[in-house]
Amino acid sequence: MPEYDPLADLYDLEYTHDYDVPFWLALADREAGPVVEWGAGTGRIAVPFAAAGHDVTAVELSGEMVERAKEKSGAVEWIVGDMRTAKPGRSYGLAVCAFNSFLCLLGVDDALMFLANAREHLAPGGLLGIEVSSFSPEELVDPPGGPELRHDFTCDLPEGRLDRFSVSRYDAASQLMQMHLFYGVYGASGELRERRAHGLKIRVTGRDELDLMLRLAGFEVEAVYGGFAGEPFTAESDHLIVLARKS
Ligand SMILES: C[S@@+](CC[C@H](N)C(=O)[O-])C[C@H]1O[C@@H](n2cnc3c(N)ncnc32)[C@H](O)[C@@H]1O
Picture: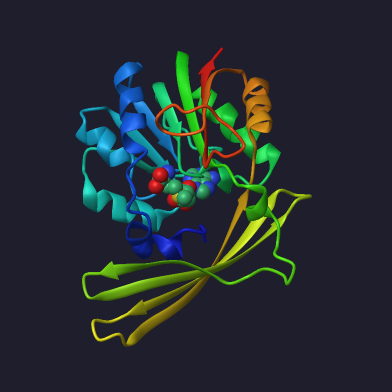
């Protein structure tokens, strides 16, 4: 079962941010179309692309995520498939792989397979944008007493609230981070309605590894940013954004 299937009903409650959307929209306005988003979730970015008039295809592994996305807009072409192997059958001027979808590829071979597929679906001179979280050293080291339970957030629901706690463990040898997420859904009077636990695994990558993989896959890295206002990438950056052109 795709990892995100059991989380699909919570995804839009957890991730309400849209600070990255203007960056991707500006890129779509600048570059040739059409646009493809790889690992598009519930359309957090693909739906605004379509609303802005872009011709957009969205590829997503989780059928449950796609079901939710389709309720938001009929203007996106959705493909339930694996970004390593999905064949939309078109060429794109811009490809986007945002908000850690790239980190869901758990090995270098998976990442290279995706980059080859993304390149195959770009028109000559087409651009691929990848954005992943940039983790600080503290986030990748367990505290002296072992991994700690963290309160990630509490958010309001139409009736009640949602709490999320998590424990993460990073293995520096494999660059894999195993996250255990614990959800509590509470009703309007504070009564516990549902408890849920879920595991998610990502593979952390850094600027130079990503740059090297892109070069190996036949891309030329055009820009590297540390934020959505085009800030330089530094050790303090929360984001790593790489724009690479099909060479
Ligand atoms: C953190 S979410 C990001 C979703 C979206 N890009 C956004 O900005 O909200 C990661 C998404 O990548 C999808 N994903 C993971 N592995 C994938 C794969 N091999 N092919 C396609 N989608 C994948 C997951 O199902 C999930 O929806």
